[in-house]
Image 1 (cartoon, one colour):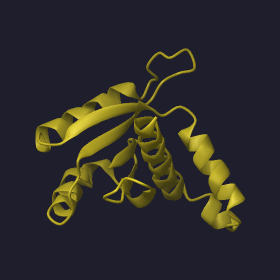
Image 2: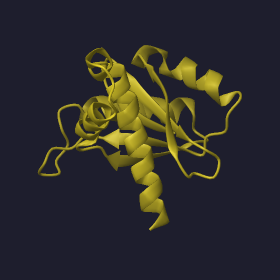
Image 3: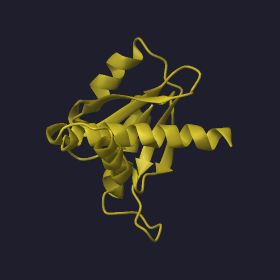
Image 4: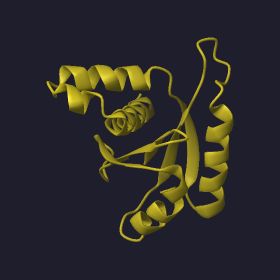
Length: 134
């Protein structure tokens, strides 16, 4: 399961049991994420949480890194049995926006920030799975 964390929204993506393809699951407000995950984990198995790590072009943490660190702490505290791995998230939002633009969706759908966050999480998870294979 991957997360594109934001202070207003968290994009969530999951993969199939064989870890072949990532799929967008949802976008949740940060205050509801623990309850959402508790409910989700009652019916689904999650091996690992992948969290986008915000970095600047020079590889230093971005301004939002402190918020992501807090989110990781919440995940570890509430779900200690699930490992958490950070993955560089530079360019995921731009890639998500480009993917949406190329999809042929109308302007209203292309401007949907929740969709961008979910697709960013999909890109993170797919990237992690591809790294794992090589």
